[in-house]
Image 1 (cartoon, rainbow, N blue to C red):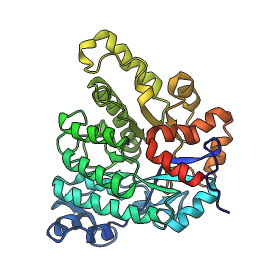
Image 2: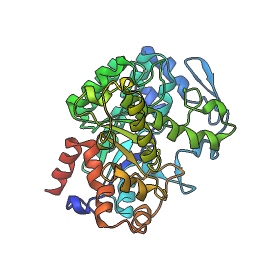
Image 3: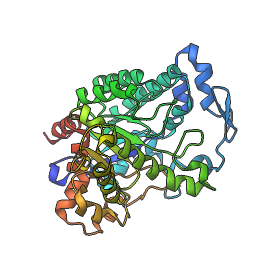
Length: 374
């Protein structure tokens, strides 16, 4: 039986689920004059090496599950990332009302140096995701993948996806892409566009060789790369956006630091705030005390031991539930029960499951909820 949305108090929102896009299908949608370059991202045959713009691309530490590493959950092939009908069945079985959906294989698009190719691939992905979500627009909600190689093109694609498809935000990486870190003034047009549209920009990391990633030069294996990449990059992103005063300059701008847990946030924020006292001139937005955990959002890992403490230390209104389905390391099935079994209490559960996600994604997601509630 379809669960449905009845009230915010009982609403459960997956603030960061994933789809499983077909790269070959997306490449077919790329304009003819760019397709020969874009198609490099698709292996010529299963398991064959890829190249990006003619440059060989091989992961030095292969995914433990090979090509299934990010397309399976619980060790079993999950079809809900590709088939929206199956996804709805999964949401019903798990007790989730609606899912905000992020890319999987599209993370490879950030390897391209040519902005026009990245733009074409992101556009093809967003068009595909809109079709996926159209199967159940009251329960499947898209996040736009943005061509970060060119901030102006990224802003343009964000505007298109939000206005044309009703997407509720944009996705970029926290890494250095195309020679720019996220504090580069060139990104001002993206922050401005997001603020004007009243949607967040979310940073989503993924371990991908060839993308400049904090600490990767010291990591000896896949596990070390994966453990470090998500958290280190998001910590760095929170630091530089705060020091450079990005949210101070763009009123209402909301930022999400996804899939890196939350237990690190109180200590990291304390360290950032402490350094304002040491070097206030370095903080272009002024004193950050009491601000960062009011206008940035995190997600928590299902079994994360630091969740309760992070909530007690000021993050209770800015941490969201995220399933990570259908990735192999997602806590599935029974994810909602696993959270409820932690005994967090009704008030905190309501924040983690619903109101915090509505705070992050804002009025466009609120409108979806209101439409369904009627």
